Image 1: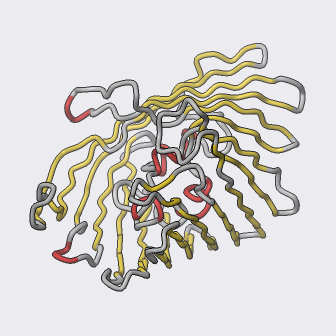
Image 2: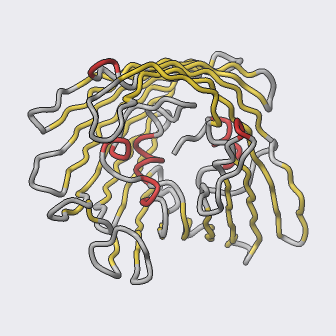
Length: 342
């Protein structure tokens, strides 16, 4: 899920045409091909539970220099008709730039194909969930530390990103909606409850002037939790509001993960975020209250602050600090890094 702000701008959100920072290697007869990428290096020091399975909890300060999501991608599009454009996007990540290694090719970032025009946008493949893009990212789409959400607390996001079909409408006087499904068939070697099962997700977004409001629901029906007895993952939904004043963006989020079991493991997330562009970068922060229905799990307050500095149009550095309000300060840390984009 991790996406740097500048890398996201280059890769594009709902369209695949890259920005001026990408390299156009072919543009002829209505067909265009861009390549883009980045190297992301980070130094992070954080409190982590280093105990082995079945051993007593042991939270210690650990640190490392690591790859923070270096990516290489291709974006292509061509004119099908005067009103319809076909496109694709293919991204590879997990290069392990700090170790001079690459991961096996069973890993990747995004891969999808689609068509867009005055009718809207239709996409099929592997890409970020709608609730990630519309609800979670406006609060903290940071460099290293993000506030918690449904994926960090109970859902395997990597699986949810795959095998999806989404239709996103054009804007109707500021109102836009999206509908989609994830489908897993008989041949899928994954955590299926039944063969040939589909989920439903959908959302709506309304924008007027500097204000926007978005709501998303996902029933997560495709998978079961691997417990005894097996249960559904449950449902997730959320609402996010944003307001922009000049270089300042304010945001608020309410998100809930409803566990599908009878164990009352539901989790509520209520957050406020702010980001300010000061000319040579951004400063930003967020505070979030995480509330658990389980009586033996304490509610907690997360705080994340950070800032970026643009060394050039293609390179920037950053620092972030996170506190999670966990026992023994688990999850607290500081991260600083540098990113180069092309």
